[in-house]
Length: 109
Image 1 (cartoon, rainbow, N blue to C red):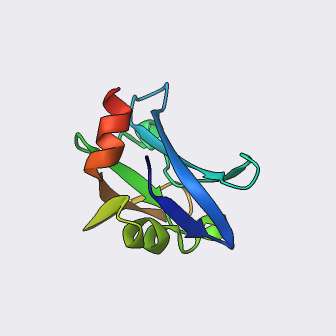
Image 2: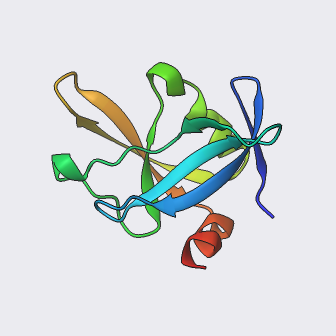
Image 3: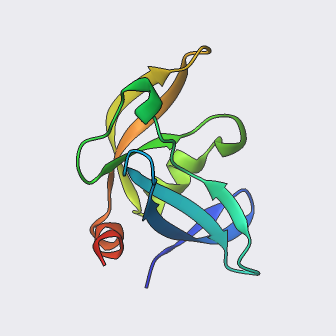
């Protein structure tokens, strides 16, 4: 069973999948209350020729996702690797993070 994450006042479970385009991990936060989507934690940067290493993802921690990096780290869902990448016309930043072993197990099943 996956760990719960508190984000923006919501209790969420994390659903891991892969983006169709680029095949990188995608993390979605789903409300435990009613199953509605709360946030997509990751960002797919394949169009910018940026692909995370195996077992890693890029986390979007700005705009509507402000604070998601801390929430996922506290819940031991991800481990920040201390690297950021800049992308897009506004030089947005994404954080390179390693997925937890439990998420990797879900991803491979």
